Image 1 (cartoon, protein in one colour):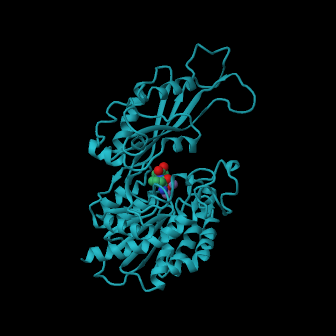
Image 2 (cartoon, protein in one colour):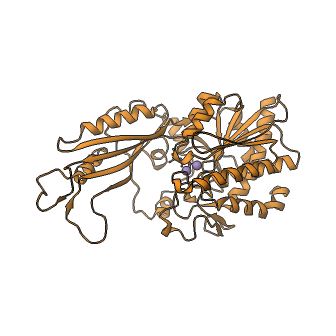
Image 3 (tube, protein in one colour):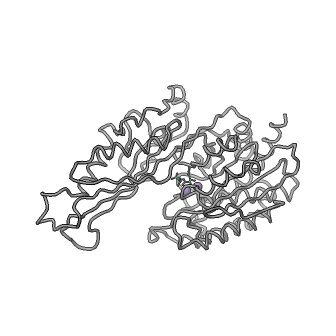
Length: 460
Ligand code: BES
Ligand code: MN
Ligand code: MN
């Protein structure tokens, strides 16, 4: 490991632990002051790391923390993006320690320890790698190019204010490449660079039957039960091969060539370990595709929440007046999220029996993204990983979504490189989220190497 990082690693870990204590939950307005305090803490950290100017940029929602160090306008500029907001911590009872009181524990995958806290991996820990990499470069006189930081507070709720901000600040944000650490890699012994993200369409549906809850004996069998109807409608959205049945849903899906699929299949994957890690007897999914294809290059439809009727203790014989569900569709490049949202809405309305009323409410969404690998950005990142890990990283398409990446390309006309250091086992969005100390420090070590190679290759 690099001597400076080795010497300062305990402080780097403690500073991250302090940042993780802020409950910056953007989805829950009860935490709005904490979200604002987190922005302030990021601003101070960027200043201390050597940014010449830092500011809290107000938006209609949560602010964006912006910082920069411009050393020479003839040199390339890297724009670092990340988010300081986190997902809600519930169900809190499933955490082994409190979500905003970080602890370090060893795990099988992380024998040198991992920091357990909400946001440890997604995305405060990964944002902080960039802050500490910046400190390393400025203290050691190794910053080779200009750098801009843009850290937002609404990623987990759809980045609405960031779109607003990016559209209004094209000049301020001008850059040669956007660098993001908000994804994962295959494993600590096989680094990978994320080359794709899925898009997203998120909708809520409500089925209304009778105008009030009814006695299920007096009315049962004679009126439509919204929960029965909703579950039947949802079940019909997949056929026996687990294909999605919405007409037109697959029309624009990019089909990968057999060569590309064969290339993907080279990434190490153990079905047995996968099943063991999740405690499942068998894998599941769309016919004709492997697990790694199902969760990256194929679109999906999943119910994320469903409610209605009586769920308290004991039994209550009732037919609820309403039933609802939240549904997310992960999309692949070329599928347009607004178009898919409309297809969903028309189809869902069309399959409802006359005995119920249907309401479909679209939430947020975004486009998918694929990055080419024949770019300076990818080659520089690859070289950086080779230096720090001693292994050539594999390109890997991820199933997750960062909808703002497609918008960056449209508004700022630059490509994004996704250098994520998390692991699937980090339990992001789940109880016991954690980030390996190894991953955190490797990130801090790899990032300056990327700056160096990217600058060299750009100037060549
Ligand atoms: N960092 C994640 C996305 C991610 C994680 C991508 C791991 C690839 C690998 C991000 O914070 C996130 O959670 N995105 C949301 C979408 C957003 C619109 C709420 C998601 O993917 O569910
Ligand atoms: Mn994230
Ligand atoms: Mn997230």
